[in-house]
Picture 1 (cartoon, one colour):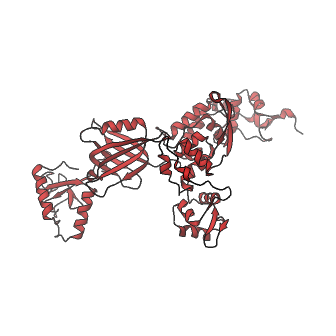
Picture 2 (cartoon, one colour):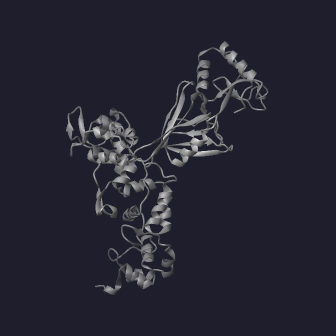
Picture 3 (cartoon, rainbow, N blue to C red):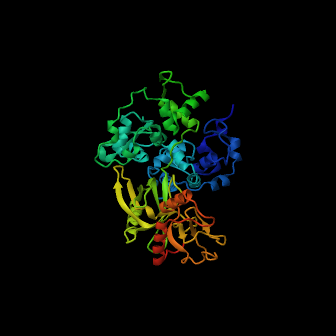
Length: 491
């Protein structure tokens, strides 16, 4: 039987090597020395004496406190912090240590000291938001922030039975009478709510104004054990039709069994269905809200970049109407955009990248028309501009609208300019026919815009001579008027 002196705990091992306990913890946690070979937290004399004290001592940097680590991870999430993403707290660092993502080097277990290099490595991981959702529970206020709603709306979510606590924590609220037990909720379950409950108008919940009744108040609470879905709602959760959901049920033996309903309309437990959809990659946990990237011209002939989270872009079909773009912003960006758009000619959008549409640009006229602060504290900004000024953004880094010029005669054999379905060209200086960027061009319009698309449809439905684009009498009159006034500059 081994002597007790031949077995060392971490304190004894550190003392044997004459290094700090934190250094030994880091050496074992990072693999610099072998793992405990004599039970949890116990090493044999051979392992301890084989370790290099100088190497163990040199490997330790810091350690740093949980507060520093939390600030570094928050910074890694983005500046400004994405909407619906709460700050990382010092207690979250404790959960990351518990999940094995960081090595405990000392201090309080709930607010541990950690290695700065390991924190920086974790901060560089592209799946950091997903890791936080998976391993760090949220208190009610944090959960409301993660969902992007008011606290009263989150309380309604809990009251409806959509969420249940996964744990509790005791918090000392000195100004509210001492210690209070606060429930904790899975951040992953909170983030999945809009996916799992597709019939709820989450946009209305997110934009509910302070003092207004929650849109969730009219819903009926879930009966415990009776939270069931039909195949049609399974399809809605996954973003597919009922037929696809029925096909999954036929093809996969592990698809959840019905818990009620009829043979033709079976009912399934919602939680089991969601777990199956996650396991099979049919749905994913939303780690951040989609965003629109906005590059605008400033008043010094430069550009400014902005981000709008959870954007909603409404494009008009008539050139006389206006387009609208709304999204969550912050006060500083909102003030800057409002100031830039307050000029006589409004704001020029040089590049707009938003989900569901190709890159767009606007020649001018964009203005901030609404600033709305929701009950959860978020600021939603709305911009609008004349639809006739909108077109496709240029591919070069400076952005800007690509403009097409419709000429007296369509491009002939000697033309080397880019030709477009609308009948327009973008003149280049070395073109024999259109080298003069003024003379041959009669009307300019935003390429890819409403005018451009209308001309393209007309050209596709009428006969045209070979090498020449047909032009109606009304269009010729308008073009001569434009020519007399002088056309715009090139693209």
